[in-house]
Length: 276
Image (cartoon, rainbow, N blue to C red; front, side, top):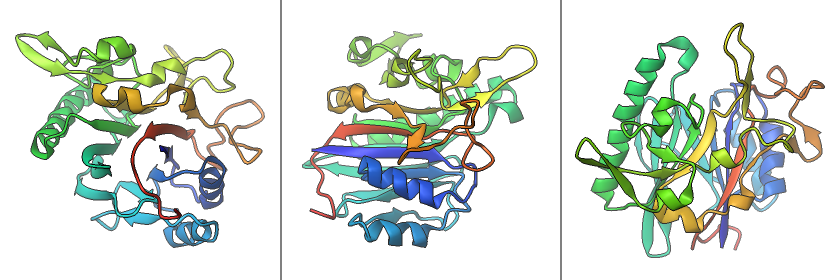
């Protein structure tokens, strides 16, 4: 059974109607939001329920930085919330794995080296939770505020996330006599794609060096989940229910919708949905 995920940094805009339509059109089972303070969660759940999507909110802190809603029968639960990420346990039949949903600080508000240092710290916290939960299966999804090729993503001291699934399936590499576990980063597959109207998830022209399109919103997965991940279903959404999320210049409509585009992906999991 395929479980559909949607992540969206909503830029603190009230875009509940777009989120609802995205969930209905793409049959979303797990919805993850950041910068969500102006989203009416009760309205969101009520409208989804009217369409037989019975979403439950998972949170500990009332004003959490990350919000996760799901349409499963108690098979996802929050186990930790911190300033920049939340951790969720997901039961896949008789196995369990972890969802780390994050929103890291902006690189424009601090030195890049500081973000790399924090990435190393947060990765150690993730690995500690994996050890405590006795699982090698985890995914990390959210606004990394880094591109797939930035140091914090590819460094062995950071997420150690590689573009090649074959390499990722080697499980780890040794650096300074220490084994560093891989993540697989499928976002390379769609970044800058010629046929996509949008070449990333965020647009930001700068005066000097600029990529213009940045892929800050990402999902990365441990090697054990690669075969459960459908690469053909990974997508940056620019149209929802025939409504464009872009301006006439094909840029994210940050004033009316959000400066970030949502990403959706699928995993093959043995999870029971509420509407089954």
